[in-house]
Length: 135
Figure (spheres, rainbow, N blue to C red):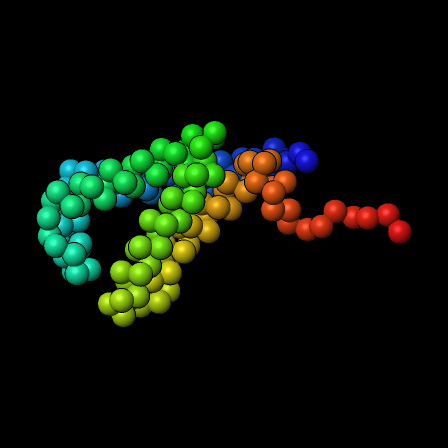
């Protein structure tokens, strides 16, 4: 099963967007910037720079696994879990659905979509449609 060069480029573009966002997110948590401390406290977590650094290390590790082609599926699974935690945090506080709660879902869908377009093994495992059969 081969993919066109356009689907491969699209897959790498989507994966690159997810990776860039996650690197920015992880970097802000590793420093940690005041905005990350304030935002994390607003989500109901302790305003601890140590906790925020741990979240940054987790985000960076998951992103590195996702960006490396041999471990991309594992990275996508771990990023999905990370995004699920973000969704749960926003849901618990009753934040707006489309802008806050579902943002992690949007990012996860972009990540899996990019991986699907660039990884033949994943396309073989989860075909978009059933192959045509002879009558």
